[in-house]
Length: 401
Ligand SMILES: Nc1ncnc2c1ncn2[C@@H]1O[C@H](COP(=O)(O)OP(=O)(O)OP(=O)(O)O)[C@@H](O)[C@H]1O
Ligand SMILES: [Mg+2]
Image (cartoon, rainbow, N blue to C red; front, side, top):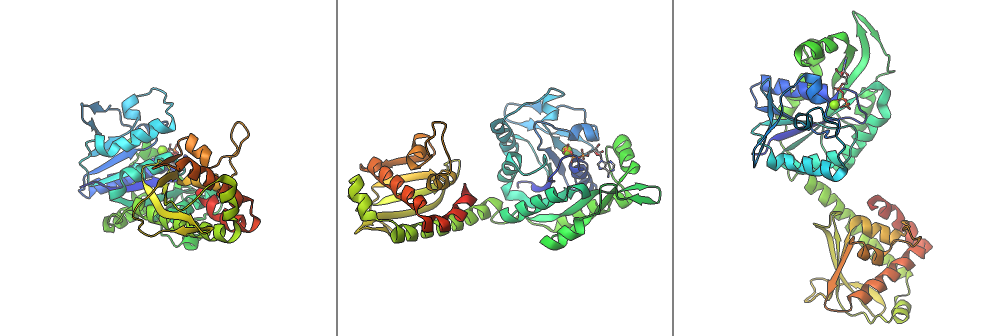
């Protein structure tokens, strides 16, 4: 069984993600579950320091062993590299995070992932790695950073990542019985109502929290732990999303690209003089071309469409008995190639042929392929130069680019 995964994230750094991550894991442990923490900030891993972990990872040939800390299993780049400064690039970060599922000996029921601020490569890698067990995310916010919190909430909603709830940390400064709104008005209730998500609670900025960090590995108690307990109680009721986040993102992307293709084919037939282009470029047509719009890593087909040029029209062919040319192009490259907004270092405009040269498109077939690519490059160029067509297509394409 893959671990059930809860992601803790925020739009801004330093708002208490690591503290809240640790506390969700502590509470799950207290309830008798096997719990772990994965620190997903490979370049600035601060969690081990915050809660005072001093061990280092042991690695065997096949496995990386989490460090055991207060009954939790913890993995952090900080426990691998020690205090060495880290300067990993995006590819290294992604491959480290991708390894976590296969290479780490987890054996936990729940894994709480402490993310670096914002939604970036780390986020995507985490979601991909633990897609099967993903329960959702706890978003940590702070009154001074409402805009960033709202952006993260919207990114979640747009990408189909379930939001377990919002915690406003450092909600106000608490000294004795006094409360001061030093970061401004609380905005968690307003955002929660606007986006229909749950408020798990507010934690004040307080010396009590500081003391918990210094004396007790950040373990929060009393009123400070209320939002955590609420989060954990909800987590226990959740089941991993089926068919999983990635599948839903795929489905979403597929629907979107399909709609775009329909719009493109309609526009081409309505606005473009295909016969004229055929004679200009000596393209006879009649052969079946398969267009595979691929994921950006070129590993997965997002949408497949077969068509041919016949009688001056672009026709979709259902279940063709043979395919003469296959054009595979990444979603991004597809959008760039139609939009023509990307200018290369030599001043030329990125198009279908450029995508092919750069390996962002692949072309293969039984002949006529180069001519087909050349022809379609010109169809797309005409499309983008046609005011009416591009007005409709641009908003769709810009979402993919
Ligand atoms: N409510 C609070 N009261 C007092 N101190 C707090 C509170 N919440 C967090 N802190 C302290 O603020 C600092 C930042 O918290 P933490 O490291 O959890 O934030 P983070 O969001 O994980 O930061 P980063 O983005 O750098 O990873 C820590 O020293 C932590 O002990
Ligand atoms: Mg942190």
